[in-house]
Length: 370
Image (cartoon, rainbow, N blue to C red; front, side, top):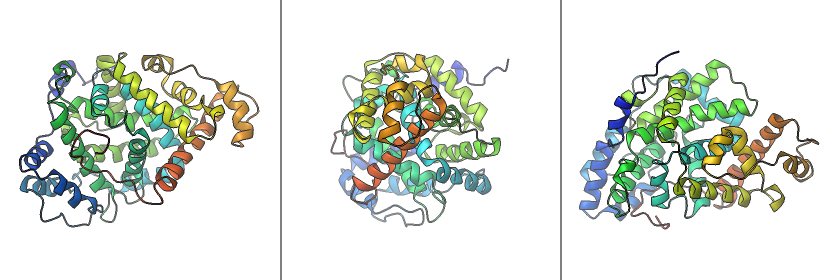
């Protein structure tokens, strides 16, 4: 049995480690009272080739200059191959993130506290999840991290969003320091693995058996994204097996029931019920979550029981999936995931926003309006 390098001795200090570069930029922005000015300046700053706005505070200007270059180890050929996967499996990737990545993160009792206290997913959940879907398209789409893409700037803005949440949440009276620093390095890396290693495992659960080369290419893109998001080099897993091992250790260290995790998962289930056509499909969310993460992880965040039989009967007529019986669970789950992912993307990113992009913005606070 291989001994994991992800030891408690390494990870315990990481629960108190933040992101000095981004934290300094946000602290200066608030000290100067320029948060609204900064938010307005960054709204039109979307493509990697766009010049950094000249009127930003000095630390923020420095931040964008320092983080606007991909790491030397980024492999263009691997990234191109990884980008191509979104075109082939976009609905399944989106659904797996929604029904596996998020519930697994919410099952980590300490890490879930940040999103719960920030109210960024428990309030205005539809917009927040659509923003996340837009981010995925930005960073995973072909050329997304290149000079003409939007992925690099989107990741830089999310890194600032994390710093803003740390700035506000760490000063809340009800923040328990036993949970660690908000969005600390361990939690940030765990979230990164939930969007890479967990998604790759989830695709397998849906019957998508990726070649090792495709798996490694997809994981490599997320390693590059992790670098942009401020994950420390020693914590950024180098490959799929390393990343899966990190997430397993995270679960050992943190997985437990919490009010925050249950509330966040309920928001996701409510979102799925809202976007799918008709109340008869209410079982899609619980069924997909339990299929992708297993009953143990689903029980921790109070996911209702799965109901493949009801879904099979409804999907055959309501969504024309063509499955007449519920026994073939993997094809049924794959079809359900495909439909859910398409609805989230098409309706969430296009129709509900009148054809415009959902843009990540650096918030001025932790309210819904941010």
